Figure 1: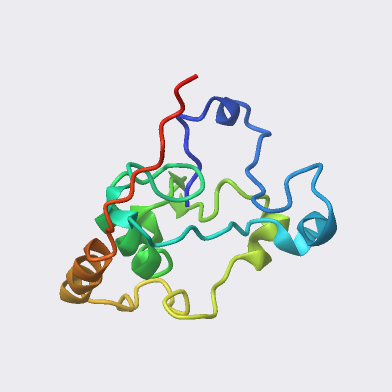
Figure 2: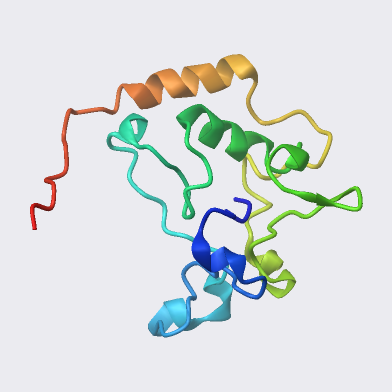
Length: 143
């Protein structure tokens, strides 16, 4: 997902969200191959969330699904452009762009190609995701 400029740390042009390889981590997470990778949350109650992705850049479930299927076919919808060139993965140093999944469905498409899902198929996925709500609410911190 694109750099979220509403996060205070992102006011520093040198700050980058490296995902699982953040400094200070140990074990597999310390490996540079983890840079740019993020844990995927459960789909349980996904339709009740207020923000999506690691940086909260997306606030609608529909946009989250649309991002997955059009990130590579229409990157201009999701990433900024500089001098007419789309800056994909703008919150990740170029050295780690190779860690971003571009081979598996739906990321295996190229710019300008048809997205992996049609608008109707996105609606069908959303309908399914809305069925995953079990009514659970996390307890509020009362301190």
